[in-house]
Amino acid sequence: MTRPALPAPGVTEILRATAVPLVTGRVAPGVAAAAVIGTEQAVLTTGHRTAGSRESVRPDTPFALGSLTKTLTALLLAELASRGDVSYDDPIDLHLPPTAAPRRSGPPITLLDLATHSAGLPRLPGNFLRRALPHPLANPYARYRAEDLHHATARIRQRSRVVRYSTFGMGLLGHLLANAAGTDFGTLLTERVLHPLAMTGTSLSRLQGPPPDAVTGHRRGRPVQHWTFDALAGAGAAYATADDMLRYLQAHLRPHQTPIPTALTATHQPYHPYPRSPNAACMAWTHRATQDRTLLWHSGGTGGFTAFIGFSPEAHAGAVLLANATPTRAQPVLRAGRLLLDAVVSAAASR
Image 1 (cartoon, rainbow, N blue to C red):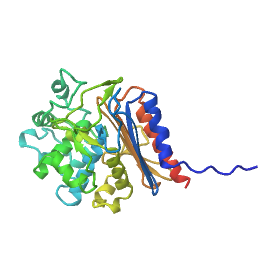
Image 2 (image 1 turned 135 degrees about the vertical axis):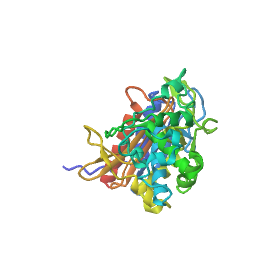
Image 3 (image 1 turned 180 degrees about the horizontal axis):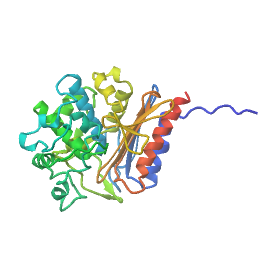
Image 4 (image 1 turned 120 degrees about the vertical axis):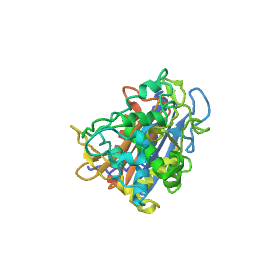
């Protein structure tokens, strides 16, 4: 006898199955998750803002996004380019002081090269560790200033054509966009991306520190200092709530229902394949095409937080997972995030 098909799990049920074990298994004190499956959407939070406290994580509680910030910086580039404020082909020299221009021959590095990790820059600037000392794990980006970034760009000698993930490049991109607009990166991002997408619970952790209501980050179950940013803010300074990340997911899944559809769609286009990988680099996003759908995703981590976001435009499904625990070698939060993305995309396909 053929058994009747079981009903597809709901969004909240899928989120609960992913988020709750991370807290009960003591992977993280608190977790926030959001997902979209077609016309259904949900946010789920569980656990506490700090280990041992009774203050619960809420949908409007900010978490550090780490490198998920890079997707916002790339979207900012796409928005400025769509309005003609900058060009994707602008050489970086155009938006740098003359003393900071790279002293090398050959084709110039462009803004699009930075956004697609195809400028051949290393993961971190050559002078980064010197500025991060003596506490490279506690708050490594706080002392890295614009003058340090300018010194690093002036020392770029030879451009590699290899696609290589670069925090240096994306932090530099945020700095250059702010220079082009004549303002600071946080103000520019807020005006051109966050406000149009109604992401009022998203902000940057600059030198003054994180949002006052942010959860506490943890390493090995113990509270740690928040990371703060200066010149490299575009690479990792954002904090956001689960509510806002749901809005961000919806914007990528329904770009034409937002005020910035051209910019959102532009960031989804693959430009360069990663070496020895089925994945390609979009503007910030990692891209993989399968037979019937496209997947785009990004992960992030700081000294006390891990984050994951991914979506499939064709399946009209996506998910976000935020945790106040630093990444570990086993990467349980990122593995859970990938499984969550698989679950929501599969659920969308079954409906």
